Image (cartoon, rainbow, N blue to C red; front, side, top):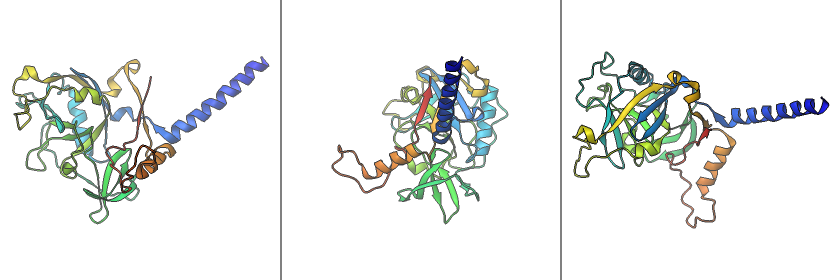
Length: 283
C-alpha cells in the first residue's frame, strides 16, 4: 500500500509538470473555431480567426452549419497560388449570400496580442504573430492584419472590396503577400495541407485557373464544425504558442542561421510565413 501511494504521488507530480508545460508551450484551438473539411484528397482542418474578421467567420460558420459547401468543389486551382471553392454557378440556395463589408484589417485594440518580431518587412512596417497567426501591423494607420502565408484562408471577391459572399480560397503555393490588406482573411489550415496540395489543377494554359469540366474538379464531401464531429473522431491538435521558449529559441536561431550547414548567414531577417508556430498532432 505504501509503494502504491508513493507511485500515485509520483504520477501526480509528473502529470502536474506535464500539464504546466503544455499550458505554457502549447494551446488547443477552441472547438468553436475548428472546421473539418473532407475532400476527395483527404481531411483538412481550419482554425478560424474571429479576432480579425468576425463577420466573415460568422458567415462561414452559418454556411457550414447549413451544409452549403457539401457536394461543391474546388473549381479554381492554380499551382503555386490558391485553391478556390464554392458554387461556380451561384445556383445553390442559401440566405447567407449578401455581400460582406471587407475586413482586411482590424484597428489595433488597447490590449492586442500582437507579438512583434521584426520591422520593415517588405510588405509591412512590422510583422510578428497574432494568436499564433503570422500577422502584420502598421502603427501609423493603427491597423493589424493576417499575412497571406501558405494555408491562409480568405473570402474571394470581385473588384469591389465589399463583395465577398460565399466563395473562399486557401493559399496552396508560395506566400501571396501582395494580397495582404487586400483580402479578408479569416482562418488558417492547421491540418491537411498535403491534401490541398493534391487538389486537381487546371490546365497550365488556363490563365484564370478555373477547371471548366466539373468532373475534373476535386470535391468537398462535407464541411462541419468540430463541435459537430463525434469526440472519438476528432483529431487532437495543439499549436505551439508564439511566446513559448521553444518557439522563441527557434526564431533566434533562424535570425542568425546558426547551423554550421549555412555559410552565408543572411541579414537577420525572417520569412514570417516559413517560421510559423508548429502544430502537434496528439495521437
